[in-house]
Length: 147
Image 1 (cartoon, one colour):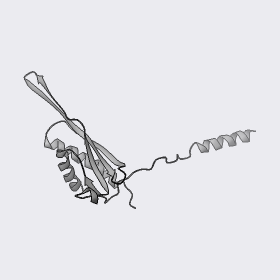
Image 2 (image 1 turned 120 degrees about the vertical axis):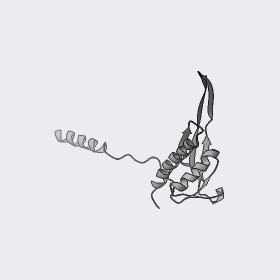
Image 3 (image 1 turned 90 degrees about the vertical axis):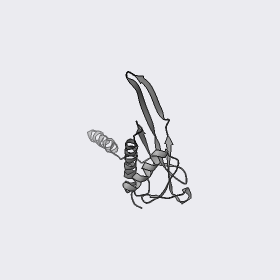
Image 4 (image 1 turned 60 degrees about the horizontal axis):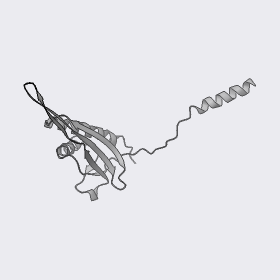
């Protein structure tokens, strides 16, 4: 009887360590894909394009959506500019930001998304936000296994 209890415990112990089944397919950005940059914040788009080249992201930027396999689309959040009276002057608080999506052109499946935010109108802050965003995108492309 003890043997049966031990065997039953062993079987249940072994089943608890089975690897979970994959339920969702992981989406990936294919390295070397032709990409079209669609609607995006005007100031961010210039810096974003420059950063794609500077950081040597493994994507090819094309000039029309028809040539592209993948679309990069920006969804801008509301701009928040507040001017408040302060002792000795006025205070200006700025917050601009948005989300950038990388989508499959055929079925508009989102392959990657990232957010950006700046708290001033300083061009350096805008370039930093674009640089950070492209750095994250580069990691997503680089992590893609070659087919």
